Length: 479
Image (cartoon, rainbow, N blue to C red; front, side, top):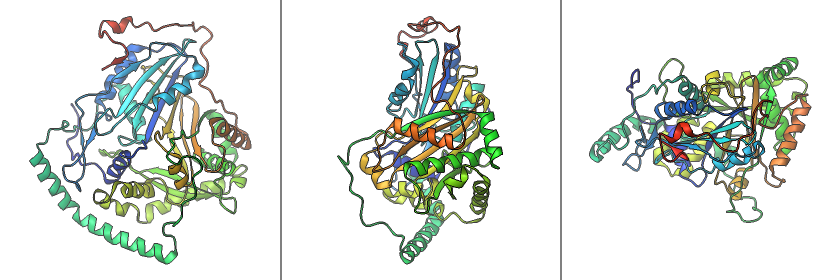
């Protein structure tokens, strides 16, 4: 591909840990959502899909033939197709359809690693979903990939074709890579011993007992979710009036919601994990998840009237992030050598915050091009996370989970929330009520739906697929 860079296709150690975690029954997925208050331009969406197939998402992971080897990025031979739903559904059923899309089988090793689908609404509007394995990218990288696809830009990297290495060549190259990794492995062993000794001395080792799980522990559950939109000017004005920033307001909202759903500490404070993007600007950075979290402690009661302490705590956490060695990251060279369950826990300790189950993640201003799935601006854009396959026992062992993901696009701030707290009534309605109450504490007004069509929009009963039938006898899934 013209302008692409030749570089090592050995995946980052944190990405390999994420991949090993994906091999468990629980998938870690991201979903981008666009809503148009009109019929979508199918030709434009097909161009977007075509560029996604050739952009930075056009890769998958190929395992090393060595049981302790490093895996590699390769170019898949069978790119994902485009699903076009032929039967319109009411806009009120869009969230349910998004949930159905979240159960689409994805696999970052065997493919497909992502899935693009479009749904017509009975009121004349259109919804679009892009579901992707977190192993291929994080939220920041995904927004960049969307903007590239909308602008017709290809991948900056030129990965080898899948299966292009013969077995003996792969063995030879991966042994050499392991030899190069030996110094890092040695340092990781020393770091692990040091952390283990410190844990024993401080008495912060693993808890011996696990709380009883009500009902069937192996029962799969759907983690409650909610999505809200706030006018961006109103959001910024409120943050400014409280002496803070947009990021501080999100953290304060996360803390207030955490307090409401039972994640507060004995003194009422809430500790938040804030993911920090560590991509290196100006150079080719092929890492899928270059993220490290910093923890801050927030007083939810004070945060509703004054964001200065939240802002100061965030600033200090970011300073420590730049100055203090990353002890968790020092263990990552051990990832290829340890069982996948341990590798997954190592990754969570590095990227998802080690001292809290509450996450506040802010994408910031999304590139406007990412909002143009069919070449024109969508009326709504948002992103949310999914964990299909999670069981009741897993959530109880983890002590529950609350995660907020936010960004701004097309004049709105979106906030998607997923939450599960053992011992509480966990439902979408309950979460929406708690989120609405938390927003009221900040005197913010939000919308919870996906808008409504323009007054002139016409009712539609079926797609006009005449532009597609000449290309394929089947319009349900286009390659």
